Length: 188
Image 1 (tube, helix red, strand yellow):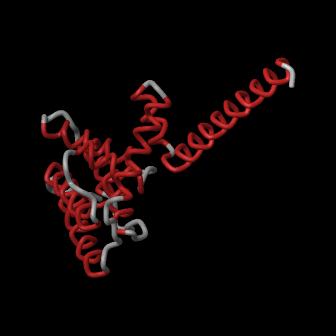
Image 2: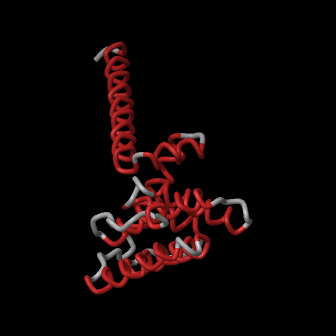
C-alpha cells in the first residue's frame, strides 16, 4: 500500500472520529436543552461556556438520579394542600407571613418527596432536574422573599412571589394546579 493511500485512510478515520464526536456532542446538547428548557439557557448564560454548563447539568442529573425521589402519599398531598390554602388565605392580612409560610411549605414538600434541603442554590439545582419549567419561578419567589426581609418588596411583588411558589408547589404535590383564588382575588 502506498504512503498516499495510508495518509488518505488515516485522514478519513480522523475525520470520521471528529464527525462522531461532534454528532455526539450535538445530541447531548439537544437532549439537555430539551430536558432543562429555560434552565439550560440560564445555566449556559451564567457559566459563559456551553460545555461547562452542560457538565453542570449532567452532574445535576447524576446527583438527582441517586436520590430517592418519591411521589407523595395521598394523605400527605391532602395535608399539604390544606396547609397551602391556609397560607394563601393568610396573604390577605399578612403578605410577608404568607410568603414565609409558602417558602417553608415548598421546602417541606421537597423534603417529603426526597429532595435534600440544603442551601437554596442546591435545592433549586436539584429541583431543576425534575421541574425545569418552574425552577425559574422558584428562584424569583425566593429572591422576592429575600427582598421582603430587607423591606424592599411591595405587596404586588409578594403576590407574584406567592404565585411563583404555588407553581412549584403544585408540581411537587403532583396535583392539578389549585383553583382557589389568587391572593389578589382573595382581597376582593
